[in-house]
Structure formats: C-alpha cells, structure tokens
Length: 327
Figure 1 (cartoon, rainbow, N blue to C red):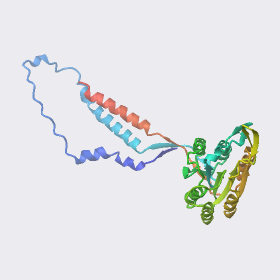
Figure 2 (cartoon, one colour; figure 1 turned 90 degrees about the vertical axis):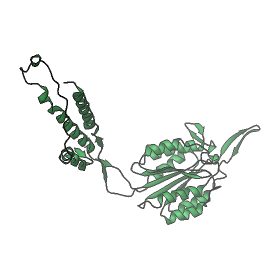
Figure 3 (spheres, rainbow, N blue to C red; figure 1 turned 180 degrees about the vertical axis):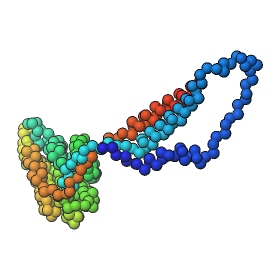
Figure 4 (cartoon, rainbow, N blue to C red; figure 1 turned 60 degrees about the horizontal axis):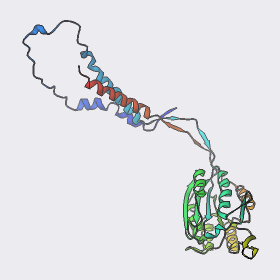
C-alpha cells in the first residue's frame, strides 16, 4: 500500500491561488507603439493567431509542476508486507582480552597452531551468528577497556569489528575489572532482566582502576549475569636450543577470581584448553533461556518521492523552454 510520511504538507497545494488573491496584480508593461507607413504590408486576414490559445499552456504546466512538487514533499512510500522479527529480549555483551599474552600459540585450527585470539575469534564468530534476536555488544580490553560496538541487532557489524581486533590494540596488560565495570555501565540501565556478559581472558588482572571482585559486586547489584572463560592450554611444547621441553602456558590465569565473579552473579566459569572445548562452551551458552517478549513486526519501506520530484523537474524544464521560445 502507499503511505505518505508527511501528509500535512498537502495543505500547501492551494498556496499559489492564495498568494494570487492576496498579492497585488502585476501592472501591464506599456510598450511603445510601432507606426508603419503602409498598412497594406500587413495581412489582416487569415486564421486566428494560434499563440492566443497557447498562452494558457504555461499556466497549466506550472500548476502540474507545483502539484508534483507537493506530492514529492509529502514523501510517498510503498509499504511491503509485515515481516515478523525474532526478538528474544536478551542483551548480551562480549568482552575479549587483547593483552600481549594472547599471542601464545597453544590452540589449533585444522591442525595448524594459532594464537589464542585467533581461536577466540573463530569460535565467537559462529556464536554471534547464532544469536538471532539478541542485542549484542563488544568490549575489547587490555590495559584499558573500550566499547567497540554498543548493543545492536546488527550481528554482522559485531563479527566484522571483532575480526579486525588485534593483540595489543588496547595495551599489553589485562584490566579485567575495568572491562566488567564498562559492561555494567552499558547493561546496568537497560530494561529487562536477561542481561549477560561473556568475558574471555587468559590471565590475571594487572591493570585498571577497578578490581575484578569489586566490579563483580557492582554487576550483581545491577542484576548482570557474568560467564567467564579462561583461555589457555595446560601443556605446551617449546622448542629450544637444548631440545624440546613442556611448559604450562596458563600459569598466569587467575581461575579463582574468575570463578568467584561468575558464581557471585549467577553465571558460570568455563575452562577452554583447546578449540573444541571453547566451541563446546559457546554451545552451552546457547542454551540460556530467552526472555519472552511480544512479537514485533517490520514493514519494509520503499521511497517513492524521487518519481514525482523528477517529473516536476521535467515539467519545469519544459515550461522554461516554452517561455523562452520566440513567438
């Protein structure tokens, strides 16, 4: 169906007639008379001059152009069929660690060693794609915490900006408390009860203004549920000058603090030692119960105003050519 966004602008249609009735009429220009010595040189007979009837055409073209301009100003739109939108009511924020320790290559994708951030991106990308109906935001943190993407239904943008994140972008240290505090600030005042923070890190809090446990208390007070994920393998083979030896690349991971934060807010702590475990964690997170909301519908709109606007310009161009045409 056709819908007019600003139908009240149609009241401007009789404006030229009102102006003509209010403004004084233009005085006719007195031209000098042309005296001809021989009247016989002019043919006074024959059919009437066609220009007399054609004088009404400029006024008609101007009226048509004005009507088309008013029609374009009302902004006509074509409304498509209603489309049901899947809205779960969940606000979900992802917080991803970009500190220097995320460079450790103790994860594997297709049997190829990759760093922790690459593995986290790969699994989180699929997780984001499955979150149909959720509003998703993205926080990146290192020495500082930054809101990379505010809450949005645009999952593609979240995937793209997460893919563009690089290690060290937010500093080399780890500000877990600031990341949680930023999430509380962004999610705490949102309406509804189903607000979730998924925080991924591979270390301990070594920077920031707020301690992780204090930030967890603030999250609990705001009703924010936090799921924490500890990244890093338990064993890693390191090649050196004196042969290979096995080390634990996750010695800096502060699991106790992550467990306390998650449990105090009603969430859970997960340990991801490899890509398969990380993928399984996100599959379990998919089972979060959504908050039921009323169904929402969206009607696609197609703007139609360029058509009457273009037609008005063509009519005006024809009118200008007509007026400038010599009689």
